[in-house]
Image 1 (cartoon, rainbow, N blue to C red):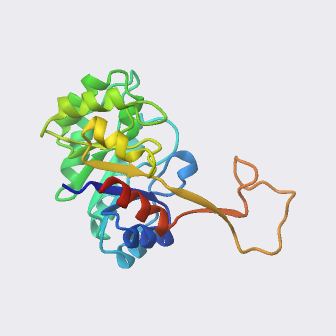
Image 2 (spheres, one colour; image 1 turned 30 degrees about the vertical axis):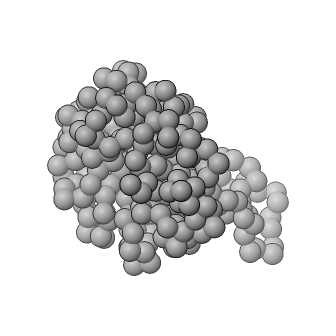
Length: 244
């Protein structure tokens, strides 16, 4: 059985590269420096026009933690409706309470609102207090899959294997966490994962000739004239490696 490959992207160039490289889906975000927030309507619409593969839209109103106010929850509802109208195949979100537990009721409300789109509960899962309890809670929301590294920076193989076994056929565990062509096959073999998520971003210098080196536009110095993109060759290498 072929492994489903999802690539995290934030621009149309990367979306096209992911499709040409053989990925089955993209997770579309903005502001990946913050871990990804909801992309604009214009970006969603343009990516939808550019690619035929699945487009999963991040629904996250801001960076930071995953406990949302009533106003932020309303924003998420509005953004889910927007993603549906613009032709997304799925949406990606996650909510926690202040004690680090999955907010089952509010998450279920968003899952039901999103239908018939598929739903991924994102790496808010990895910030939860108890992964085994959170697995059962996310299943109770009706979500289709969980994106997780096993609550570590890199894919935590023993934890991921335990989650995949516990999930069974009830929900898909979408495995992420630093996956590259050289390590993804081993992670898949040892965990039994059927779907993987990867960033594969490459930094490239922007085309600007004039540069104001005195000014920092964001919170991280040095990024004013750099861009990060996904390259077709890197996606192709990952797809080949996991489907050998």
